Structure formats: structure tokens, C-alpha cells
Image (cartoon, rainbow, N blue to C red; front, side, top):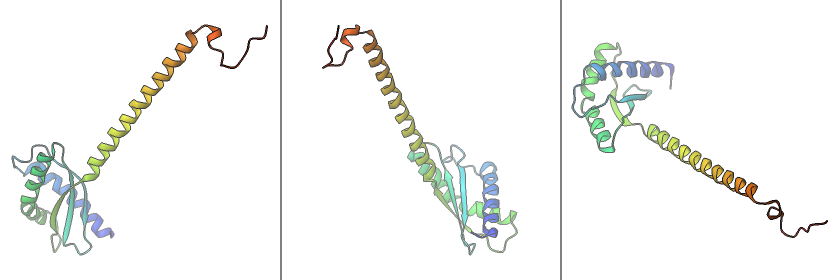
Length: 146
């Protein structure tokens, strides 16, 4: 991306967050979605807005549809705020990287719990071997020389 499109993407992200906070009053938007990133095409025709929405998949799709439905209103509000010749169309997308990140963290947590369980089992096995009498701890095939 060029410097101009990066600046425009950053400005769009900030202004959209304010518009969504103050002006959107849609019952399908239960929690305020977070704008994770904005990518503006080089010709400034489309701004791809990636949002992270918490909740069930049904609630996520309802919120995404509400954002897509109100894209025209948000575009007109942005056009009044920004001084650019052509305001890009707003295309909202669900940011899947956030969901994948949460899944990866859950997997890492599960692996850590399994590792701790194995260490606890090893610790129990070592304490049981220490409790055995000395003659039972000798490896097989070794003889007592007295």
C-alpha cells in the first residue's frame, strides 16, 4: 500500500469507530464490533473493513449484515468528515484471524494442561518407587555380592 492509502485507511478506521459508537442504532448490533484493520485499494474505489464480532455465529452474521446494511449511511457520514474527491465504497468482512487466534490459544492451553497432568503422573511414579524397600528397587539381573 502506498503512504496515501495507509493514511486514508487509518483515518477511515478511526472515524468509522466513532460513527459506529455514536450514530448506529440497530438492534442487530448488540455489542460494538471492533475494527481490526482497514485496507483501501490503490484506486480508492473500495475500503475493505475487517471487524471482530464476539458472540455466537448467528449473532456474528446478524451484526455483519447490519453493518453491511448501514454501509451507505456510514459512507455518507465519512464523506462529510473527509476531504477527498471520491469516497470509497465500504465492504465489511468478518475478521477470521481473531477467531483462529482464540482457537490457537485454547489449543495451547489444552496442551499445557496435558503436560502438567503427565508431569504429575511422573511425580507420582517417582514417589511410589522411593517408597519401595531397597531390595525391590534393584534392577533385574543384578546380583547381591556379599
